[in-house]
Structures are given as structure tokens and as C-alpha cells.
Image: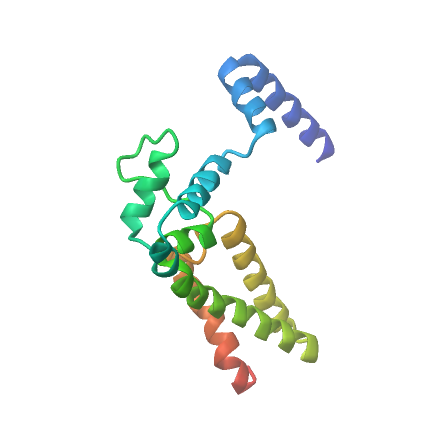
Length: 168
């Protein structure tokens, strides 16, 4: 396995060095995360909008267009920041963002406490699910605001909130 890993690594390095475009892309990644521009544009929009929008939010379309206008945007519909708490704050404002974030954080704390008290393996599995889900949501986005991921998380929430009481 080690030999295979070394051979593949050498081939990837040769491939990157062969194409100037790829070399430039990899060098640019060394200086700044590719999504940092989106994050900066989102935070700039949130920082420069009226206080009413901070409290109650603005529409998804308007927020995406404002973020997209602050960077080189090739999409006419605008762009999300792709960090869930920034997208939620930009679209829904402080009030609804707090409500939306409190539920998964509360479920995480509940399963953490249950695991620490009873040390059940299934609680550990759901604790790890919640940890990955929240970490991904806060760092990479597409967790809390994603309909596909949220549908899957309903199973986890159901276990933590309801089935756990039945002693599954």
C-alpha cells in the first residue's frame, strides 16, 4: 500500500507540473482558501446593510445578488456564502437564525449529555453524526440549509428527541 501511495503521489506531482494552469491554481490555494472571497463578501454585505435587515433578514435572492456583486460572479442568480451561519444570518436575520441554530445545537448537547451519562454505543454514533453535521455546516456549508441533508438529519433528531425516551 505504501508503494502504491508513493507512486500515485509522484504521478500527481508530475501531472500538476506538466500543466501550467493546474500549477497556478495549486499555488493560489497556498495563499488563500478558495471560498474566502465568498465569506468576505457575505460578511461585508451583512456589515453594511440597514439594521432592519440585520434583525429580520432580507430575501434569499437579494442576499445572493448582493454577495455575487461583491466578487467576480458568473452566475446571474448570485451566490451564497456557503457557510451556513453566514447564509442564515444574511437571509433570515438574527431572530430566525437564532431559532434555526438553537435546535441542532440543542440536539447535539442533549445527545452529548446522554452519551456521557449512559455510555451507549448508539448514542456515540448519533453524537458523531451530529458532530460531523454541525462541523460541516459551520465550516463548509450546505448542512443546515440543505434540504437533502436536513431530510437525513430528521432520523437523527427523531432518535435524540423521541426514540431515546423509549430505550431503543
